[in-house]
Image (cartoon, rainbow, N blue to C red; front, top):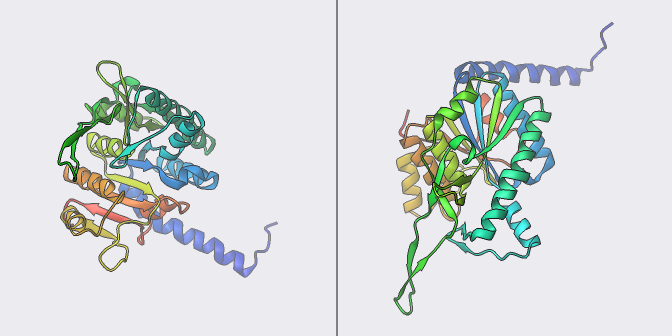
Amino acid sequence: MSEVSSPAATDDVRQVAATLAEALPYAQRHAGHTFVIKYGGAAMGDPVLQAAFARDIVLLKQVGIHPVVVHGGGPQIGAMLERLKIKSTFVDGLRVTDRQTAEVVEMVLSGRINKQIVSDINQAGGRAVGLSGKDAGLFHAEPLSRKAERDPESTIERVLDYGFVGRPVEVDGSILDLFSQSDVVPVIAPVGGSRDGETFNINADTVAGEIAIAVQAARLYVLTDVPGVRGVDGNLLPAITAAEAQRLIDNGIVTGGMIPKVRMCMNAVQAGVGAATILDGTTAHTLLVEVFTKAGGGTMVRAADQ
């Protein structure tokens, strides 16, 4: 005997059914494509949001999309360095990394954080494996170029050394293609090794962008702590071209930590990635809303108007 549902419960069920029906054409459109997802920000420190993110990734894989997760971990690295009483300094938002700090970075990123994300996805019913740039030669790293800075009072230039901070080079997309032929989701820590065997701390946004380019991803999603890019009037911009994004930077509308994220999205779409979207990772299931609904969310960056 079936249970009698209240009118309110029936309405809820119908809404769920309507949402699933709306999602169907998007699932069909994206099936077989690769999505690179940069996972970071406050969402990584909230157990509820962590679980929601893991379920989102499993659902993407179940409908035939091939997600590749690249994660950050700046706050967690900072907390561990503080516990170990290792002082950090920053230049242009990048953590200056000496050899001792590089060891801690690898321990936190490739160890604790990476394995927690893998575990979350596995517990949600998926199959995930953790990687870094060192695994199977996914990518190598080379030192980030030193920067010369002029003292405004003495006009003497001093060279800023980022230490063991690097950038990814020689990304081997064929390794990730192997995962697209399986039911396994790769979860990548932004740590790379040089040809000389040194370990480098790499900005996770940069790694996500380079990987998206290497696999020619259909979509690149950047989950962060803000809803997206705002225009001159302060309102959220649902979509912009790479040229429009550059003008927002030039005119001082996009500032601070958003500049490297926007530039990374611009570089990716100009190098062949289908589109790049900056999303609010502090809202549960924001990824599913963007992928499977007409309303979407965040700010999508494209190479040109389409």
